[in-house]
Length: 364
Image (tube, rainbow, N blue to C red; front, side, top):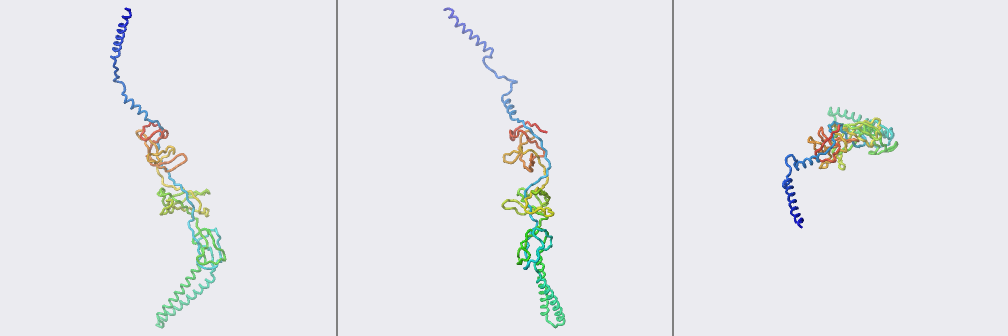
């Protein structure tokens, strides 16, 4: 009974001693934050964020090059000149020396109209002119001697002029009986036959000239400023024939439905080997300009929807530069709108945005 009464006070003394000792060792129970060399929490967070915002990409330095610009469009071959041959003197066809599809030299006869009666009339008209000339000379002599009036002199002069006019009209009719080619070309159509009686205004056929042959191309309105008179064009036909021509005509008005402007080129066509109406690929050779070449896979869009490329500025930050494609090839595109020397991102561009800081590894 006496032992139990002593255990309680002894236990209390031991607990109190341990508590005092712990307080002395632990600094009275107060924990103090370290000072001096310990890093600031905000500084650590900032450095970590900075490291997280630096992206590793691959890049390449491009230098602008001068390239020959081309504009390739589809056109068609057309006749250089075409003419509907119309009869100007009524009569029967006596001769058709040229067959349909044959080449005709300028001035050659295409159709001959019967002119036998006309030649007789011309002969008569010529004799009448001589008669009126003699009559006028006689009247002049009488008038000089005051043996005839001035009225008779005027009448004689009028008769002579009328006879000459009749003779001239008959000579014009004689020319019209011989239908000739006004230019060299192909008799593309012949609508009459020998022995047929033609009225004035009847259609005889069609004469076309295809040497040189004309190439007609419709230029889009946003490209017409690149083409001028004299612009060279390389022409290719599906048959494999190739030729070179130069723009000789630019229409002053645009097609209202397609908003295109028609330009024409003339190409030598020896032997008339190229027919009209064929499709022709025309490659216009434009002025040289500076451009950069890279894979089309690197193209992107800027905030306004324009075609662009991601590049790196002098502070190693991403910039998005708009570009215009001026030429496309199988494995690359040529663009304009960039500085002469520019660093473009070639790998990793899909993971960075404008303003991002990058760690660029440059390719040779």
